[in-house]
Image 1: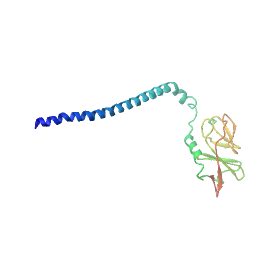
Image 2: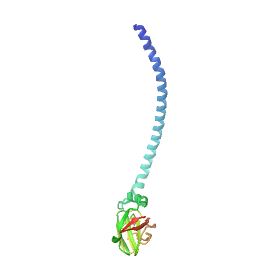
Image 3: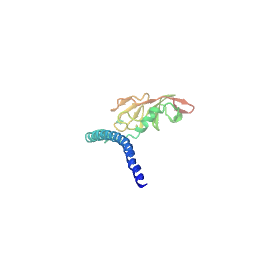
Image 4: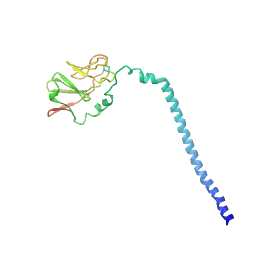
Length: 178
Ligand code: FES
């Protein structure tokens, strides 16, 4: 009985070898795949290292290190995507004729009586939020760019692009996105 039991045990490893052969092949694939991934990872790491070594200072430090944090950069995207909802931007009564207000992510203006406009409050120069409306101009304090309250176009300073406009309409007592 013991011998009989030994033989099956001797066969079991043979079966295991087959199984092991399959799993070895699988393991080889896994190892090869893993090696490929490692290789790619190494390449990426190498690239990352090179990029980091060469680019960190230039990419992250240069242009914005001395500038105020563009606090509205996350909301700039929201400006672009939020124009479809008809959300209230301001009360009509709060927007002065010939001027405007800065509220939330927007500059809401009334360049002429009954004509309302809304623009992103994020300056197109380097992303600072504009802070005030001075006469016919929207003012960015970072580098003194100014923009027209009528169409958001640049009227002074280093900015060369208009503030992105959001279409609006009057709905009851409110200026809402169109
Ligand atoms: S960020 Fe430079 S003028 Fe506005």
